[in-house]
Image (cartoon, rainbow, N blue to C red):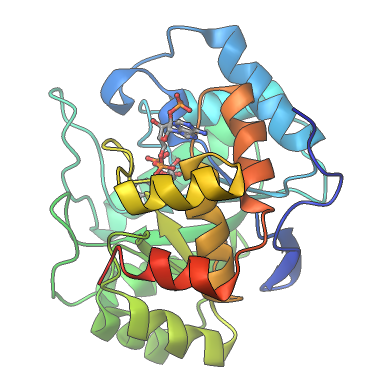
Length: 289
Ligand SMILES: NC(=O)c1ccc[n+]([C@@H]2O[C@H](COP(=O)([O-])OP(=O)(O)OC[C@H]3O[C@@H](n4cnc5c(N)ncnc54)[C@H](OP(=O)(O)O)[C@@H]3O)[C@@H](O)[C@H]2O)c1
């Protein structure tokens, strides 16, 4: 399968950086349940190297992945980093022995997680840090000012270049914006889960990126007869069409699909490049309706 030299969706300006709208989510490079090392260490490095050689300039990670493992893999595969590459990370959750994601958002927790990201990525500065809110069941309406202000202080010190929020309610996004500038929001969103439609449109008007996590359904990949039918008609994979729909949904949507397979990475780029016609979009829209 050949990959087009230009990635689908073009580019987006994230703060002072231009990134490809087709990015890469590195979470699932760690072991099962995002704990421990991958079964195929060299295979994980090969995916990261392919990401970079295909021209993708936005990689999403977190020190909680593994923990530490995903950042160590990124460092091993890609350090020293190209100036064109933006690595986005997140803080606000830690890991327990059973693989859970307990919130960790006191100022000390956050500073520890920032230090861990700097160390494992081997960077003096973090390009983009998302404050991950809520818990593993989803966003939770709760105050964010102490945590977000801690990250603003680190930004003022020059350790963080840009900030965003993740797993956030619309009210929390607004709260963050009253405290300081954000360049992006990273929330769960895909063809079948469209709770953030209004938020996406508001952020688009403000020039702020919306980065859907679980764009392919995450641990339970998207399954839909309508998606399969559109994909068959267009001669592409369902996952690729799900990504093409996201790119078409709004210009501020940046993709970070995850995969541990070079083949899937290439297939997703080809699929996301497919032009959807209005009839296709209407059919795909009806999945989340
Ligand atoms: N902010 C947050 O709270 C949060 C939460 C979750 C995730 N994230 C971020 O979002 C990124 C994306 O989420 P995700 O990786 O969990 O889920 P995802 O992108 O929705 O889906 C990844 C899954 O889809 C499979 N897949 C990918 N391409 C495929 C293809 N062409 N055919 C068949 N299966 C395919 C992958 O399996 P293979 O490995 O076999 O390809 C993997 O199991 C993560 O990497 C992470 O950076 C953020």
